[in-house]
Amino acid sequence: LSRKPRIITFGLLKNIASLDDPELFYRAWLQCLAVHYAMWENNMKHGDISLGNLMYYMKEDVDGKEKVIGVLNDWDLASNSADGVQEVDKGRARTGTIPFAALDLVFNRTVIDLRLYRFDVESFKWVLLYGCLNTPENKKHLREWCDPEYSHTTRIAFLSEVHKRKPRAHWEVLYAFACDHMSWFMGNIAWRTQPVRTNLFVTRPTGGKIRIRDYIDWIDSARWKISTMEPMTSSPQKQELSPEEVWERIQRPLLRLVLPAKH
Image (cartoon, rainbow, N blue to C red; front, side, top):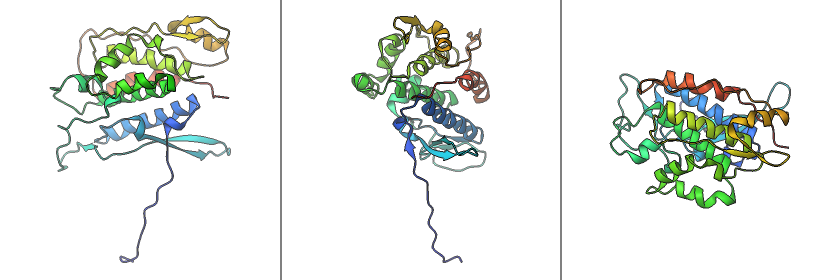
């Protein structure tokens, strides 16, 4: 039996960027985020969160309906921080893909710990925003996110004028939520001193515009459901949060979001 040839086979995975339905995209994205945290808690730190590494496949549930399964791919740059593990030190290497890398990593070349959990979480959030804006009209703007020299300033500017960018059709609610959650994350988790405005406007089905803070009423009127975020305020002292604390703070609003399927 030891000489019997064996072949490891893998199912066909597709990139979540190919999903046109915002609900399916969000579900796959959220599953990848949850798996990432579970692996981090088991000392495996991915370190290279990007749109290209978030995959999915479809699977039938017990009722015969297809559901999306998110798969976090490409663990080549992952670091194992378990006690007693001997490996090449990857913790000192700059990781991540430029358009999705945490702003602190892009801007600050003297970051002491490059393997912070919040850095990967921020990358997940940039992936979500990128997915919402992935249209031909935004192609030039998104290309600037990829420029190592200008990525930091371009994305900082974007956060202060998110209302100027039009997301994919039927992705307005997800985009509004992603912008609002990123704004809170920057002020409460990443401790960015740059003020982030979220005066995002989305178009009503009947025309006109509404502020991001009012979009929940619009969703209700359109028979879409979303739970209001709990009040989130900055802590009195700025300190680095543990992965458990970060996960506890970010998961509640993420798990409550319910998006309409694209028809």
